[in-house]
Image 1 (tube, rainbow, N blue to C red):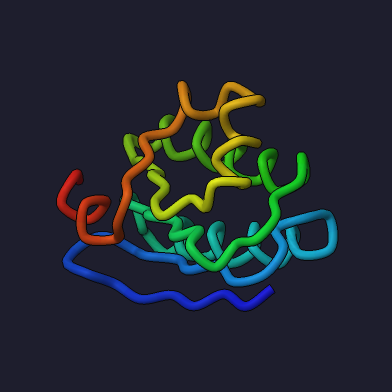
Image 2: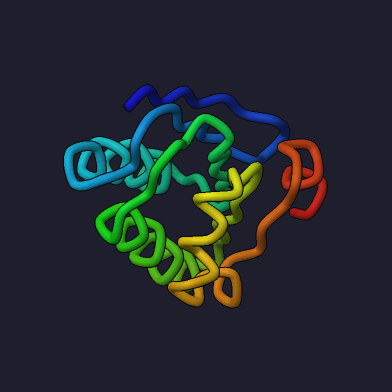
Amino acid sequence: MQITQRQKKEVHIFSLKGNFDFTSAGEVEQGLNLAVSQGAKKLLVDLDGTEYISDAGLRVLLKLEKELKKEKGQIKLCCLRPHVKEVFDAAGFTQIFEIYNSVQEGVNSF
């Protein structure tokens, strides 16, 4: 899993490339948690490069969403590939997360 982070205004954008599964979930969680511990309240996860997401990946996102909500922050998602979106639909996550078609739409939504 390749994780890149950049910032636009107050929004921390994490782009994930590869499989978001048991093997990479810990690494992704560490990166997201580090940003939050340093004060990030607006996170956008770009899943354009994510070819597969497992329940481990879903758990990382859900856990962070709950933590950020307590801190008056938000995590939003963008650029889900069709197969990844199917997993989100099946898990009911499209009802939990705001999902955008592009990074710019996601950034503008904050």
